[in-house]
Length: 137
Length: 137
DNA sequence: TATTGTTATACTCTATAACTATA
DNA sequence: TATAGTTATAGAGTATAACAATA
Image (tube, rainbow over all chains, first blue to last red; front, top):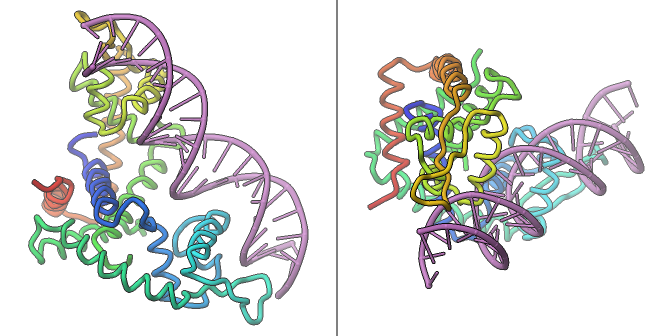
């Protein structure tokens, strides 16, 4: 619906994905997988269930994300000590290298995405978005 | 990637969809279809190709959107005078009634989505989102 | 009993390619 | 030739339900 906040959010998000794939190339790891990669990097040893919770998707869905990142050689499923049901997820050396490379590319992408905004406008926008993103209560 | 504008946009958008389906019910017409409905209302007689362009999706994809809205009795495919290849899309009486009803619900939804923001903050947010949404040059 | 990871299956939304009818 | 709408098909990303192994 034109003129609504919901629609403005949607359009900005669509634009961000367009720019993402334009700048990162069509064969890049998707934004969702990049988020998963950075979450495992931030919390090495996290289980698939833990990752599912942080990504707000189901355990079943996380299996494919992890499969894909493992197939690319970026993360590993190691045995979790003390619970043989779980895997301890961690980045491989290759995964850390790739994440570092991605960080550089993402910085360029972010700069272009916000190129019409001053630095303080960008910070303000992010703060306002946080207020919208939080569920009530 | 945490801390980026792209991620903040994504999270706010996910939250807006969650709230949308929570408030409108699981059987509601989707946001995309509502946008299509309001576009046809704003531009009666528009062709499917025209609608595809405005929605920024392919002609093939628009067929299903129109099929769905027609099946619900909300829009009609009328012959386009002067070009027998095209349809002139228009809302049915039922479609206008439903759109009016949706407008009311959307107002409540929008209010809740922006409930943490003042009116001027909401306006500012929308203005900043527009700047992000516009492709460069 | 409850939890972890997995598989099978399905749904939504989108795309591309090939078709038809008209222009 | 080019355009409008359609169909068939596919891919990404998600979900639910049922299952084996383990707690």
